[in-house]
Image 1: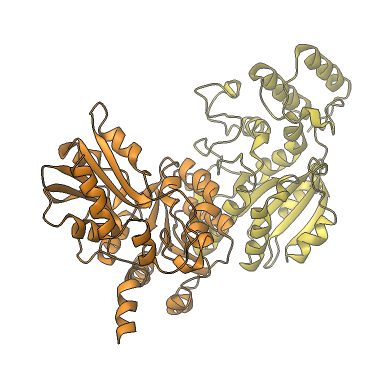
Image 2: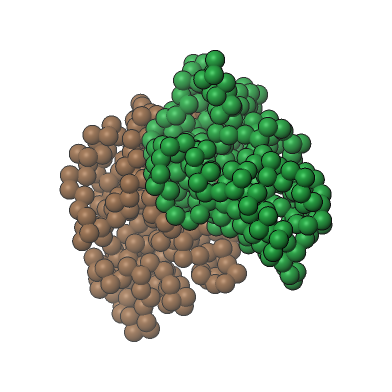
Length: 256
Length: 304
């Protein structure tokens, strides 16, 4: 399966359901792919597993697409947003591999900290990953959490920020790496679409500090008329747009 | 000596909280205590002896509740303790989403019920906690009337798979009732009216009823509500005595008594900012929630 096929599936599901946050889903697709391919495994005892929380839950379409890609999805992805489905517009923790029900911003990081702290108490070596958005950085609970994770030396925690700049029109995060570093996190900045670089950053573990990865991404990555276009934050494509997307993707065949 | 007696009378439930939590911390290695920078000195030995399960987590209630949810997801049993308005109203969405929606096991133990912190003013009052928490499906709500009742209720419910709110108050009833989690208790039976009374209001209710021919049902668990008991002791004149916002539990009563005709007389905290200071007792008296005020409400009902 390649990136274009995954995008085509997401676009199709959005068209059918008239739902989905495509812009955000496209900006985190590469991060999720690398994360699930290398760090998330299926074990019966959850406390023996690394865990991942999609704190910016509106990008659930990308999460389901990646879960489906690695055969982790417990139901047909075509059920996306259907009445009796677990595959909602925001992830629900009743779905296997979804570690937290998110959707309201600023909740995933504190929960991830609680799991990381629980792992420390239980002497587990497994890691906790959480993905937040740059708009989500506005929430006070994020900054509370930055204090907490550093204070408790949670070096089993990695927070990835999908920096697609969608929050800039409200509150800019100027000098974000400097700010995060000053909270005593190990902060690094990467290209959030380069798989080797993503893998390298996710492999990184500090002696005592939590890791913060600023992943520079493009909202709507891969579809020219969606890229950095806030109109596509929460909008489903019509048939003409789907055809245009297929034409563009077929012309630029890029594999994962 | 006088001061010492007053201290004993009004701080007993908090002392019981410390004692019971210490017991749980030592007997259940899944228990984790998160203090919102209150009660820290009382747990000084536990900070030393079990430092990985006792935290002065700080003054950040939203994240504290989120962290508690994460702990619960690893099988730990969190106990979060701080002042009622900050625990319930500041972090309401975390209680709703992280604990209610995800149906996680956790315990939220507040101090400063309604206007216990009378002199500190409206920022530290919390008569709206029960009303607010009843809006969260899966949230269990416990309002003990004495320290001993709190101890039993906490020990029986702290690991039952749901989030549970325990509302500690500074004043207690004079007598312990043999209460069970999720059940109401018949204190006495009579013919003229049925009184539904919660937590630390039982003492004033008993004083106000004196020799009146009424049934008194005493509830220390609000959710899950023991509607069956109310149905069994139905009277078409109901008096509901709540140490929180008046009428908070009317819908629970209505659900239990669907299809029946009855009148409810409510005694409780009015839905307004209580801008006086002074003491809890002065507020009780001013709001008609001491035994004299309750006597008036009960007489109003009985002569209706």
